[in-house]
Image 1 (cartoon, rainbow, N blue to C red):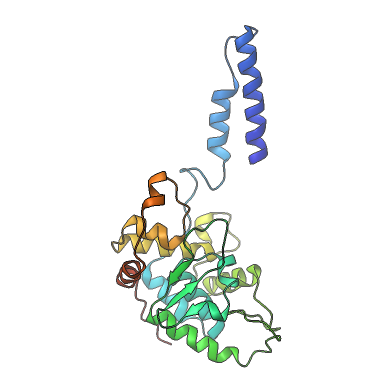
Image 2: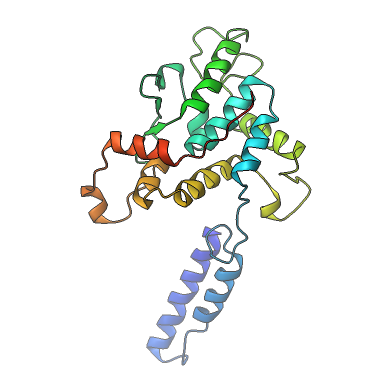
Length: 245
């Protein structure tokens, strides 16, 4: 898509020159560019089909359907923190602060705030996974929170397969459909996290802080959010799922 944009920019500049020299009356690229980019710019236009948003009850159903302690912890942590796949697989055991129920994420080019919180529900599921992790053939020196069956750090594809496998089993993911709204992927957990925090009354700037969104305005640099207040608001607004197991 970026290549097409560059083509349009080059052509538009060329026609601007021709207009300036009086060779042509107008730049024909502008209206065509506007229409073409609007129709085909994937993922960045308001007319794009929305990502799948599931209800709190559906998220509870999804997580309750997962018996494997590792997979349950993966989906729960994605939903309760809104972190990206890359951020999840990079978490090490030492990154978790159990007293504050927070996680210190590794630096990421798309993230500003590196601290995320989790609630009691998530803590119980994480602790259950840590107990099960002891039975995995973890490679010496591997400190990853989530490992695969070979005892190595789980990768992005592994996280994707975990989420889509269980979502498909409960009817939330249709891999054969071409419609984005028929797919439930790891990023849908981030969408769920964001939407339900907002619907439960969390201030937008607090949601942006937890998502780690880059600060977009100069004034944001001087706007500091108290971590204790952020954690308190998070615990008040994050949906309680009442998982059965």
